[in-house]
Image (cartoon, rainbow, N blue to C red; front, side):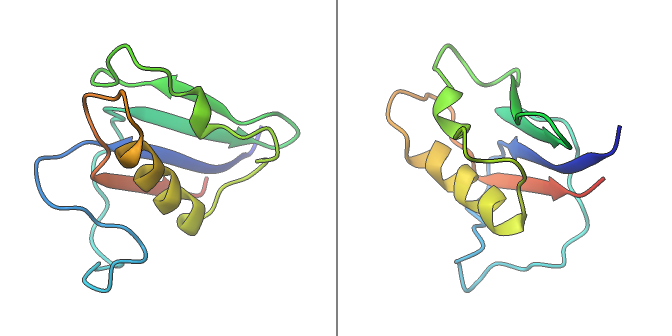
Length: 102
């Protein structure tokens, strides 16, 4: 089954890189595909799913999946990283994301 874009929240110790950040370098080499906080996958004909990473902690990540989402692009990926980083109750915050289109 063909995968639609895959969204990974990657936790790192450096600064934030959101798409709306004018200092964001969009063409960096890809980071690891290990999802430390969460991974959102959207498969054709199915609901998007989220899997927890090792650093997700005990907080609920379900708020990142909206029932109206059937696919994800770079912009939405960036917004989901920012949404998680600003969400109360999460010990570890998203600082980097990886978007991939399989």
